[in-house]
Image 1 (cartoon, rainbow, N blue to C red):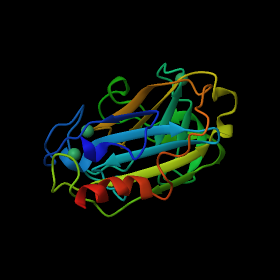
Image 2 (image 1 turned 90 degrees about the horizontal axis):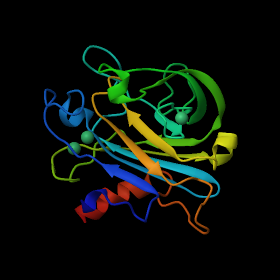
Image 3 (image 1 turned 120 degrees about the vertical axis):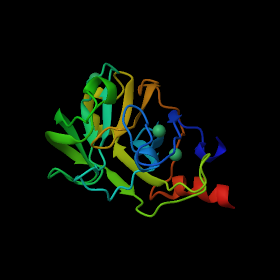
Image 4 (image 1 turned 60 degrees about the vertical axis):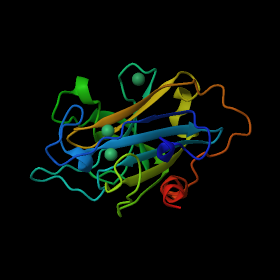
Length: 219
Ligand SMILES: [Ca+2]
Ligand SMILES: [Ca+2]
Ligand SMILES: [Ca+2]
């Protein structure tokens, strides 16, 4: 599990490392390593919300045939299953990459929304810009399956963009791809009203922090 441990103590994170070929079942769908959502990290300080993701799904994957594009980060204040906000990861559906949206319509995957959560932002209003980056070259030697490829997303969002939601309630963060063959949700995040003084970004920007996980393993 050391490969998945973040560089510093984060507010919340979850790991589900799977593997296999395209016909290997994940939860709820199939796709093996190519659709494996492996680790999701959440942290915040007084200025920013930080998100990071490790997945076997190549961010360059486009919708078509049996291929499905990445989804967006979905944020549920109140942890009641209604995802009020979304961070656009790739700039699909006419949305701005790195934009924080108040979402009026989420895409759904292939397996029923109750099983998979939201996929991509389909409609909503742009509130402002965060920062969003991802890798497109697979990194091996992570987790229990050394030959598998891993890709990384990192984002930071000014907490001011959440308005009165921020600090008023607990929240959860979810990510999956357009088919929702595999997904992760970080839940039970402590209420944002009590940030720890002096806590800085656990996950340095520009993907340096997460890539550091893999390099530490290889070293
Ligand atoms: Ca895996
Ligand atoms: Ca997984
Ligand atoms: Ca909600």
